[in-house]
Image (cartoon, rainbow, N blue to C red; front, side):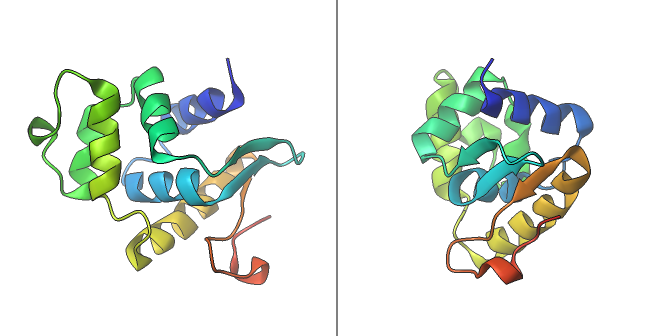
Length: 129
């Protein structure tokens, strides 16, 4: 199992992303995620990579409701396309997504993850342990 899959499964099992799905998307797409020991988890995924990963771990499709999207309005048969479409409509580069990413970064610290700053932010303004 690859480290990104392990990360998502741990995040799901611990309930860290519940209510913070936009932050999860933002962090996985635009930030560096490391384990506390410095090993790399992710260094920014493309939308397509993230869609594939969400499909692989069978992320709950109802999570898109947090993005004010109707799961029934997204492509029902192709789960990778479903997630790609949701990501494209989520506003992952919005100020709200940056704030949601900062909050998720704080929630990931107790699990032993360090999340880098959002694109355009300085290291001193990021959340880390």
